[in-house]
Image 1 (tube, helix red, strand yellow):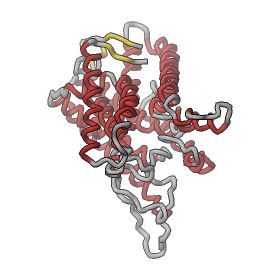
Image 2: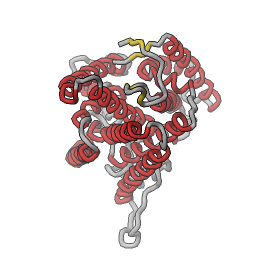
Image 3: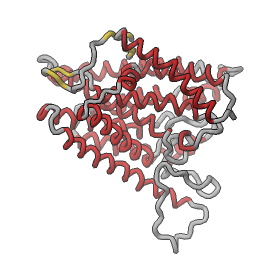
Image 4: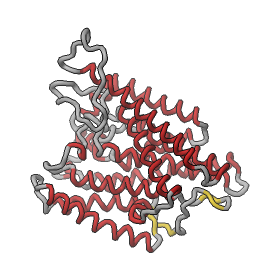
Length: 395
């Protein structure tokens, strides 16, 4: 849907009415920019491993998608807060239609995802349309990418929208528990079997709920703070967020230490303290440590990865709130990208594929950087034009 909206206000609330949160736009714009870069450079041989998805540890590339889920959770909570305080409708009336409208929007997003991902799938090249393996690949891999994960995860966390922090945390733990049981039963091996899943596979929403609910909790605390104090004393709130972010990252790292149980040369009688490599540091190769459910893996959607990524997203968001709401720094380019994230996401896939037809996979670093800048130089003017026209593409 193409909508025309008023210019955003940097405040979360003004004159009793909810307005667009500028720092959230900056955060979303940063996520869009990171996505564009890592998706492009990740397929070239010269690209450092830190900028690639290698599925056995948390690289910088693996931190990008959780930002979107965090932002989705934050935005969902904002919409709910606006609906339940608008006019004299009351919470019960708003709740009766809110879930239905969000579900319809998620269905639209899933349809868009199918149209974007599946026609570009190499499976369509000479594929047997009546083959069960073809449709398995569509469902397991091609369709269940970022947009579909956002849609399904939004539906999964929707029942918590009116709950307090205890209810949200219990729902988060429930999702982790279900995911762990299913993974132990069959899912971990299934999602890695050919054709392998992407970003957690069809059941990844159980753990993608971790960054989404983290965003919802952050929004709830932001709402309570601004309703009581406005934008004064925001530093105190950011301090609490920073502690929560560190806590989540430590939980993720602590869980990841279980991966050391799968070292091929382990000697448990001597080595009693077994700490895993910290995030962003690659683990030993697969012949020295078997892939397992404890490692930080975006492909498997493991809890260790999701908890760390949720904390990292919250920490990055703290930085943008500090820049935007404390220091009054707007960063217009990021805001431009963030206000039309869906349009840029869809467009970047086509531009990415087109540019890569002219750049060899073994190109040197300078060529890859130049090609990446060309892609950004194409995408940003489109986003800026949409912003100038006040057209915001949302479903």
